[in-house]
Length: 364
View 1 (cartoon, one colour):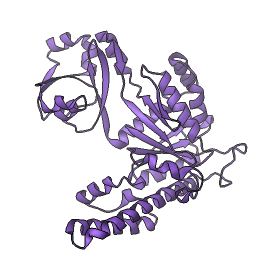
View 2 (cartoon, helix red, strand yellow):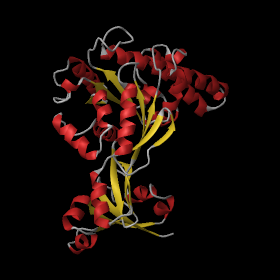
View 3 (cartoon, rainbow, N blue to C red):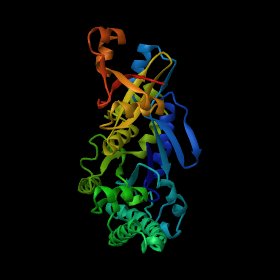
View 4 (cartoon, helix red, strand yellow):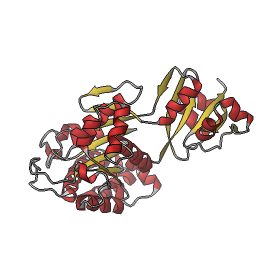
């Protein structure tokens, strides 16, 4: 999974990016990878993996991972070359979803680029830059498609769609709200438009607003209403606290969160929100060599889930031996779960569930 982080300067975006990647690197047995200064890969915290690793005496634990792309310098006019944002916008065309960090706190010591705190205005500013960037992409595609559209019905149909979509964006609407059928959406998806991507709003608050999850923060309420109206996700976070958490080990982190009255960190909130928004779950493979989590779409059938491990697994799929995580842990071993009839043999039509522990049987 790949998430692009956007937001105006001084909203806590870079603080959040730095703390999330650092926290992720320190909290799991997965090597933190910095591809360049704006990209970080972090593991998805999943306590189930460590429990199963102890059960199987696994040599290593490999969690699922998320790649974060931090879009630096995104300001008003970025799509026209203002700031540094324009050169980074292309970095998020391949992401699965956009994490939009929004400032939801007042602090005279932290200057706002527009002089005052207004999360809805800030969201609109960023959205406009994404729209302008998308319009530019569409204009180039229209120019290219128009050349062959006169003698090609398929290209003519694509050109008509492109022009309708461009007008829609020029009216100030996001591509994800564009009325289109499944076939048209398949084509639109190939354009990798920024405004067609799912959005998770990170409402950045002060520490005092964390305990009640921003329930009494008017800025947060405004963002939550917007998110509901557009079927987006929103979670409340304090980037400053996340920065402090990133410096702690696992035990200290738990104690610190308890003192704040919190059940989970911002990273965990973000992961849950992104899994919900994108319709994702994890299944697990476990053995002496390794215990590993695999991320798949809800509704994925067994052969396609096997294909996440290796294409040969999908091609030669015979069956999947499945036991739920809860049943496996309760029984204490795979053999004990099998003796109780809790290990099932599933075929090609089986839809994999979150927390399934699976052993795939396949022909080479």
